[in-house]
Amino acid sequence: MASAVSNGSSGSSLIVSFGEMLIDFVPTVSGVSLAEAPGFLKAPGGAPANVAIAVARLGGKSAFVGKLGDDEFGHMLAGILKENGVIGNGINFDKGARTALAFVTLRADGEREFMFYRNPSADMLLKPEELNLELIRSAKVFHYGSISLIVEPCRSAHLKAIETAKDAGALLSYDPNLRLPLWPSAAEAREQIMSIWDKAEVIKVSDVELEFLTGSDKIDDADALSLWHPNLKLLLVTLGEKGCRYYTKNFHGSVEAFNVKTVDTTGAGDSFIGALLCKIVDDRSIIEDEARLRDVLKFANACGAITTTKKGAIPALPTEQEVLALINGSK
Image (cartoon, rainbow, N blue to C red):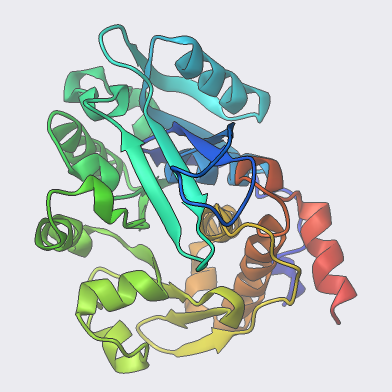
């Protein structure tokens, strides 16, 4: 039973993440609005890039496919991927557009406030013909979000990448990662997020995303299962400090979270899904074995928890040793 999580690195099968990488500018003091912030620190971010680094840090093999500006920030981000062991030959650079920036603050009421600089940013300009199809075809798991669906030409590149990965036999993993300020409207966001819903075999949503997509204010099994589709193998709902729920064709249940001192929740969901993918990339049968799946989700919950104990997503992503220490220490 323990074999699902204790076998060191997850072999050499490739997990490819597709989408945006950007720089978050975070105020030097917390609990203020963006306008009140006296200064900002730059933190590399972008959910698909976070997932790629999460996988690499756990000993897995990962690559990132996306577009950055041919500018100082773009080359800095490419360098961070490389330093973290992420394969970078799916990265393109755009000479005409800047790397995306986001200003993010945690207000005094605990809500995150975002202001994005993407008009357009380089990631939005990735064209289908710029994709490294050979890299995408070599993926055992292909992971993506929804931000790359917002505008053309990136949307077409995203759809082509999904089809290429699917035709090559990759497991398709989807985390919508809702960012409403980037969409023209909530209705458009819901429609586009759902437009590729029935392609994915693994889907992770947060409790907030579940409410948004179902239009219900309840977080229960019926609402979660209303999002089920015939191609789906595993649906995950993350519940922050309440852990996660899982749904498969044959069983469903929940796994408790770990109790840690939370400093910043950024990247916790990316760490969670990266850990899960890392553990199932070489053995998809884990999804059909509830005891082994629960083991893996406990590991993923521990990854998410550790990520909340430090500021910024990437610096906080844990190694396998740190995760096992938390799991063993909580027994």
